[in-house]
Length: 334
Length: 276
Ligand SMILES: Nc1ncnc2c1ncn2[C@@H]1O[C@H](COP(=O)(O)OP(=O)(O)OP(=O)(O)O)[C@@H](O)[C@H]1O
Ligand SMILES: [Mg+2]
Image 1: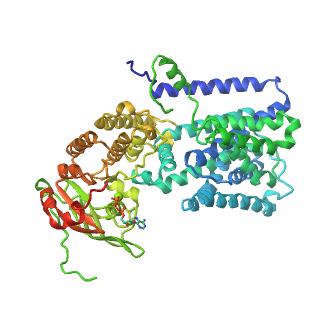
Image 2: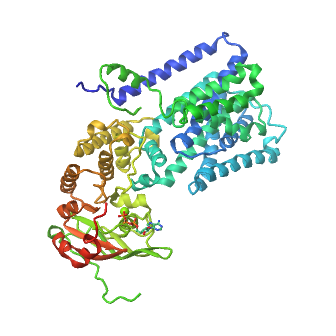
C-alpha cells in the first residue's frame, strides 16, 4: 500500500496566504471600478460585515460549544465606540483614525465579552442563553437612556463613512486569518477540548476559566470590529438595529452554516444577507424564509449545511495527490 | 466514630524506591456525599516508580479516590501530599501540571477531534507559544508545533497508533480509545499516572498486551502508576502493591501474594461472584 502523501504545515500556510492575496486583489478590482451599481456595492459591504459577525459568533457557539444570544450587544458596543471615536477625531489623518477606531471598538467589546464571560463560566445551555439575551437587551436600553452620549432613540448621526471596500475586505481577511490561526494552535485546541469534554480538558491541564473567557473575549472583539464597520457603512446608528432579532439573525447564519465550520458561516452569512436584498419581493417574508430554511436544515442535516467541515485548498490538493489511495476516515487538520 | 487502632499512614513501597520520597502520600483522606461516607481514612503511600493497584467491589469508592486525588471532588477531610507538597485548594488542571494524569472509567476522549489533536491537547502545557505568536504565526509557533507533533507521534508509537493520527478519535474501536486515553494522559508529562479500569472491555490478548505496555511505560518514563482494575490476572500480574477498598475503607494493603491469601479480602471481594 502506498504512503499517504502529505503537504507540510508551512507549505499549507503559503498556499493559504496566496489564496487570500488573490481574493483581495480580485475583490478590489471587481468592486473598485464603476462596474458595480450602488446597490450591489452596499450588498457586498453588508455581506462582509455579516461574515465577520457570523465567524465571530462561531467562536463561542461552534468552537467553545456555548449558546450566547446577545451577539448584537457586542456589535452595538463596537459600533457606538467607533462612531463616537471617529466623530471626535475628524481632524486626525483618516487612515490613523480608522485603524484606531477599529481597534478601540474591538477592545471595548472584548472587555464586555470578559464581563459576560465570567458569569458564563458557571452557567450552561439555557441559563447562559438567557443571561446573554438579557445582556444584549441591557446594552440596547443603556444606549437609549444614555442619549446625551449616544443620541438615544433618534440616533447617532453624521458618523464618517469610513467603511470602504478595502477596509471591509481587509477586516474580513484579517478576522478569518486570525481566528483560523488561533484555532490551529494550542490555544484553539484548548477551546475545542472544552467543547468536547470539559472534565477531560481539565484533567489534561487546560485552564478552563482562562480559555472560556478568552473565547468569549475573542468572539466579542471581532463582533466589535464588525460593529465599527457597520457604523462606518451606515453613517448613522439607531438602538433598534441591535435588538434581539439582530442577535438571532447572526445565530441563524452560524447554525445554518454548521457550528464549528468557518466556511459554513461565511456561506450562510453571504446567502442570508443577499437573499432578501436580491429577492426584493420576498423581503417582507424574510423571517418566514429563515424559519423554513432552518427547519429544513435541522430536519435533514442537524449539524448545519457543512457540519464541522472546513474548506482547505491544501487539503483538496492533498486529496488529489492521493487520489489512488483510499485512506480511512480522515479529519481535516488545517 | 471510635477507632480501636489508629491506622498508621505509611504503607510499603518497593525496595528500589525506598531511599526516595514517595510520589504520593495521603493522610486520613475522606469524603462524604450528604450522609454517605464514600471514602474514609484513606491512607496510602506510593513509591516513585511503583505500579500499585486499587481494587474492591463495585461502589467501593475507587473512582471517588481518583476524583479526590485530582480535586474533581474536594475532600471533606484529610491531606494529599503530591511529591511532598499539599495539593489542597489546587484546581484539577493545576494538579495535572503538578504531575497527576488520569484516564476515565467511562472513556472521555475529545471524540470529534483527531487522534493527533487529542494527544496535542495532552501536550498543551509543554507547547510554548503565546497567543500573539499563534495569531501571527511567528517562528515560535512553527517551532513549537513541529516539536509537539513529533512528540505526539512518538507517544502514539508506544501503542503502535501513529498511523491512526488523522483518524477521528470517537470512531476508533473501544480498545484503541482506551489506549489513546493513556497516551493523552502520558502526554501531560505526569509523575503519577492514574488508570481507571484500563482493561475494561478488552479481550484477553489485548489485556495481556496492555499489561506489558503498562510495565513498559513505567520503565520508559520512570513514573508511578496507580490502577483500578477488576481483572485479577492483570492486577496480580503487574502490581507491586495492592490496596483493597470496601465500603470506602481500606481493608487490606500489601503485595499480591499477601492480598491473595488475606481472609478479609477473600470474604469481601475475591470470595464473591466475580464482577465485571
Ligand atoms: N458525586 C457523587 N454524589 C453522590 N454520591 C456519589 C458521587 N460519586 C460517587 N458517589 C457514590 O460513592 C460510592 C462510590 O462510588 P465509586 O464510583 O467511587 O465506586 P467504584 O469503586 O469506582 O465502583 P465501580 O467498580 O462500579 O466503578 C457509590 O455509592 C456512589 O454512588
Ligand atoms: Mg469506578
